[in-house]
Length: 214
Image (tube, rainbow, N blue to C red):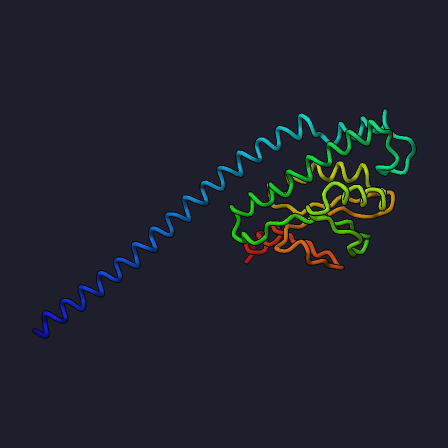
């Protein structure tokens, strides 16, 4: 009688172990399938984004067009543009304001830290103090405000054009406006509403190098 109870106890324990193992295996399989699905979705999105910006929203071409045809003065502001130039620039900014946060969100699903899913663009001084912070809720008006206040028209256009590639490759990216030494930079954060006074650059590739040295 005792030996049969022991057998039943062991049998029950075995069933519990097998059940837990099966649940864990299924959970792991679901995670793998979801990760692959998100990666495919992101790759498709980025491929289309890259093709579109180079064909329709090429920053280098827009800058050349504005300088040659659509500027009133040399203040490097949105206000310095003629009406046609303002229309072209607004269309350009609107595209990136919509697509960049979407790129960041989709890419976050493929990363280890999925909570980092919000894009922030900074205007910094030469000491990396934050002069202005843009997040998606500020939309195009927020970018135009920064452009006018810090004379960042052509740097902002160039910065946005290069930003998708930097986000895709997990690279830090900074662009200096040599007219006043102000800097454009970006970060991907958990909460874009949390304002910061000092910019701290996350050097992802440097961390990888350090690990290799160890």
